[in-house]
Each structure stands twice: as structure tokens, then as C-alpha cells.
Image 1 (cartoon, rainbow, N blue to C red):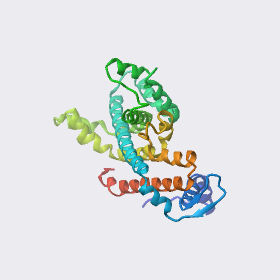
Image 2: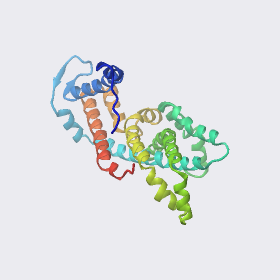
Image 3: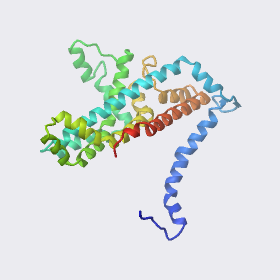
Image 4: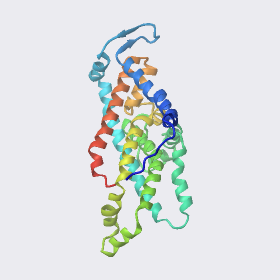
Length: 293
């Protein structure tokens, strides 16, 4: 029979969770409620007059070609960022799991990018690929490839994807490495004795046993790509050129704080929140079924 924790006083558990509940209410529930209220209002830039417009802000979004374009850009950006960040982290974790000498230095160097702020990471990648003084841009031009993400929208999107994925690789690496080290060596050795090669052992034994870690990272990486990459996009391209890298979260900022259209910006934030919530529910409802705990 499972043991239950018994508190000496009924108020003690509430006192223990109160700080976290307070943080959640102040920084998550209250801003989300404010966004819901503002999404049905039309307010002037100075905040002097406010009118209730119902779903007008949402209807304007559906009819706006720029918003539809931002949705397409976001889907490509999120899919590429999540896939690249998780694949690279899994490869590096598998390599780190086999390292003998210098393993501490190797792991430390791979973890370092996680300590860098997104805006700083974006500035670093912008300097590396700067068409005038960038080192990587110079190498590409020496190879005969004209790189200029300031004018080329496709190159700009590739650059922000690389910067966002590089920023998240370290976080994924930590969990993948921990998951690999938790797999018993005896299981892999038994498969090797039965004649399974390295590739077969990884895909048929190791990777299925990593499914809880992979599912956990998939959920977190989707949230990261949708929300936490704003600093990278803002620092690298500012949504340009010609809105080629304007993701949904950046468009919320651009319309709200630059265009001063608060109602429309709030409606976009509500839609973005609904998209991420829906994807998370789908993952827990369908994807989790394939997870082997």
C-alpha cells in the first residue's frame, strides 16, 4: 500500500505551495487574463478611449495576409529549430557517452551555450554571418556563395534557425546524456552478443528507452521555439528582410509595442497561446502513448 504524507496541520501544505502559486498567478494567470480582456477591446495609441469590439480583432487577423505569412514562417521556424536542436543534442550526447579522456572538459564546453542569453546569442551569430565583417560570411564568399541575410529572406530564416537551435542544444544535451547514462550497459552488451550492430542497438534498444526523455524535451522545445526565441529574432534580423523572419511572437511585439495596436496584439497573443496549448494537449494525448516508461 503506497505511503501517504501526513502534515501536522492542514494549513502547512498550502503554506508550502503558496510562493509558487503566487508566482503563477502574478506572472502567468494575470497577464493571460489581461490579454483575453484586451483582445476584445479597441484602444487608441494613447489609451484615452476604449471600445468593446467583440471578435473584430480576431476576424481582422484571419483576413490579414501578413498574419497568415507569419503563421507559415513560424511553423517552418519551429519545426526546423526543434528538429535541429534535438537531433544535434542527441548526437553530441551519444558521442559524449563514449568519451573516455577529457570527458569533463568536453561536457563543459557543450553546456556553455545554455548560459548565454538569447539576445547575446543572436548578436554573436549576427556578427559571424555579417556580410561585411563576418568570419563565416567571408568563408562562404570565398567558396563562391554570396551570403547576405540582410537582403535575402531565405538566408535570414536559416540564420535565426541556426542561432535558436544552437542556443537550445546544450539544454537538450544535458537530458539526453543523463538518459543515456541511465540505460543499463548489460542490455546493450546482450544485444551485441546476439549480433546487433551499433546502429541496430541504438535505434531498437537505446532510442526506445530514451522515449520519456525525448517526449519531455519535445514539449519544452516547442514552447521554447514559439516563445523564448523572440530575443534571437529581434537581435539578428528584427523580423526582416521584408517580414521573412517575422514569427508570431515577434509580430505580437511589433504590432503592440511598435504599431501601438494593443487590441490586435492581444488577440495575436491569445491565438498563439491557444496554438501552443493545443499542440501540448495533442502531444500528451497521442504522442505520449508511444512513450515507454
